Image (tube, rainbow, N blue to C red; front, side):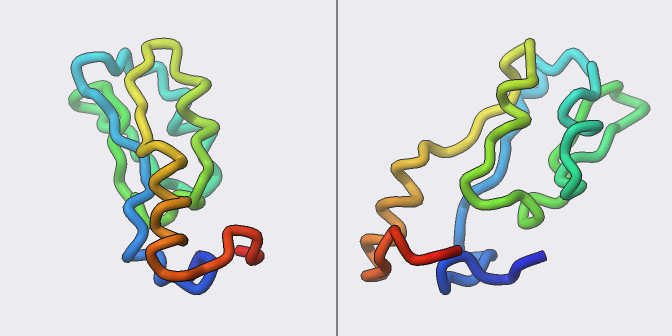
Length: 95
């Protein structure tokens, strides 16, 4: 895992998915798709869970598009732009 994004420690970046449990159908698409192992599947509840939020790639929300139940949400991308601006970091700086 990259411990920094554009010079900001990953644990200071609030970028990760949130699952609305009442909407999750337990299809496992997010769990099976995410190669960074952000999710785990709770066999007892038959639902996906966010297990390793800091493993989520900053700016990635591909799993959200796979969720037919629309149970996955992310912060707005503008949050990342605001974070960079508040730290005086050029958004064009490589990650």
